[in-house]
Image 1: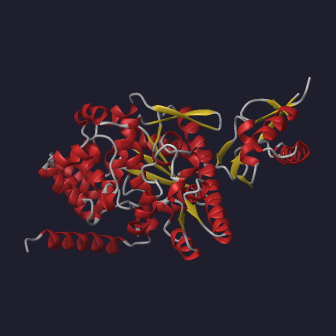
Image 2 (image 1 turned 90 degrees about the horizontal axis):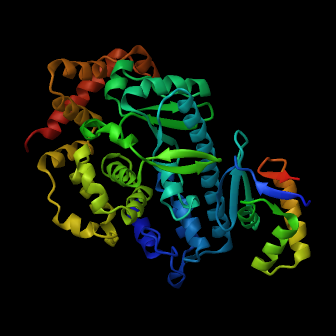
Length: 88
Length: 367
């Protein structure tokens, strides 16, 4: 079974098209610009990395390899902050 | 200060946002100086979020430096809102554990329930309403999460019976206003407070359902805040206009019986419609034909003057002589802790009260 990811239900956040600010209390808010808020939207429900990349490729038209690298980097940053949960 | 901002926001469709908000056809260039000027407005105006949204919607065109400055200010406002929502959650959980019913007010509720996007609304404190007879129980319970009164009340008994709210602060500066009334003075005391706890509307904060006032009560509260709240700006006007889109006269009319003043609501709507802003729905017609109540109109005027005028109106509204003394005496002779927090001696305090009284008598004298 593939690993799935989802944003933490305990996360408190604000997002625009270009900005994401999120925290799981009592941690301080983390601020991210760029495509993080788009990824955040897709993480509302559990999703595999492949499905997430596929959805973003369809949405943005950007090369899958580039998106895969960016998304993996973002998930690697968000998981230790408890903003994203990994579900095996 | 608001006067310069409102026409711009109106031209961008940001005062009464259409669907979709903003109009790309209105693309308006803003110079770096314009942007600097807009971002310099007081935080209560909430400009950073609205300007950020305008840029994102393509309603304004700015240079790269200005775009970066707007984005930074918007991120700062969003981070503030996230921190305050975390505090709101703590407050709600704490009061729930203490058995005190609670309703979220203003910023967090309006952002989540009424704004186009929660990221469009900034706020700078947490506001909650508790039952009028449980203010002190709430304040005492919240000490457990490190919240303490910013200013000791003139007396605990006075606060429990007459205060609008007690402001609590935590190390680090975050602030919670615990309200027992939605507005101070006579207009606040006149509202049937228990009706505010009947029903409500929920929103999610970190996976927890938090209850706000229902939409008609949020609309009326926004109007009261705009007309009676003292500080008011673009954000307060936008709250009134946003809620006026969803709440109609038929929603509000049954609530006049709970003590809400149509005169105050009309004053807020007329203020919101200044500078050529169009009120939504049937509100323009209602404002045009609505005849203000003379007594409420006079009372309304006391809210724009010094606190003494409002306090005097409150005293006049109290019928029993004993209750008048119970209201007035702690204001004249407050608790030592209150004087300490205000950095005043008792003599200085009494002098200040008498001076305020003289000023009020002078302003009330016929000319």
